[in-house]
Image: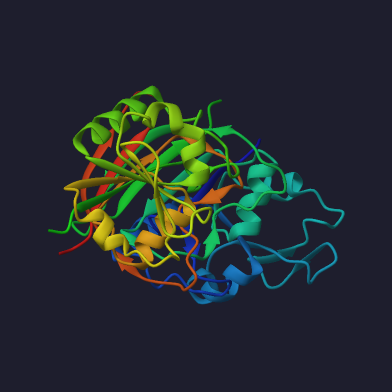
Length: 172
Length: 172
């Protein structure tokens, strides 16, 4: 059975997920971090790019992680819960993911874009922090422009500072 | 007296204001267009970049417009309610704007960025349409990275499709 895949994204008002590659998300609110942890607890695997993984390897060490990277040829297991995966290699991502039920997609840009382009995102949780960076990394950077429609299923204010959580789902 | 300046921005979920320069906002909801019109009716001048102006000159023809462009040296008046302005020229934007009370800033990227960099944005109205483009133009493209904090003052769902309007204000 196909797992449910949730892209979990924290952005600034101007849609940036980080200032630059390797920028740890030290700018998100405690309330968003609590929300993120609760969603991860409901997921049985995390998909993440290698650059993003390096900024968060500690907190993720107990979770099943599939790390997208071009540093391996195909797949490479490291310990019981860490799998490195090259999306350009011979193994199909569908086969790798089908042993899971609920997958949390944590970015960054390249991994979010890969899942959007392959129409693999079921849920999108967008946390908007009340700050502007003016430049930085986008959620998606796709090769071709697209028009992908979502349904908004919930809007929630997470704190007094003005952090907003939007939950979208792909129409089935 | 300094006028109140409201940046009015419609974006996709992934923070894009258009697919490319010259892309008319044919993808925004009727409810957002109604909201935009009501805000324009409360403003006594519009500030807009020349590319964006060209996509909306008709609907804006009755309003006081200050059009940012490098095609004039300084300022150039065309008719009673249209002023072309070169931000690199000798005239100060502050002097030009001080005869107005409420200004609506309509973009695009260069004009939004100019006003952010000069700390001239008082209110930011962000409409998020439930669609993803995957690539396109950002709200801001600043020369230097910044951390500009805003307060969220209102969240409103504009329709059943899931268009959301966020109203932010700069802390005074």
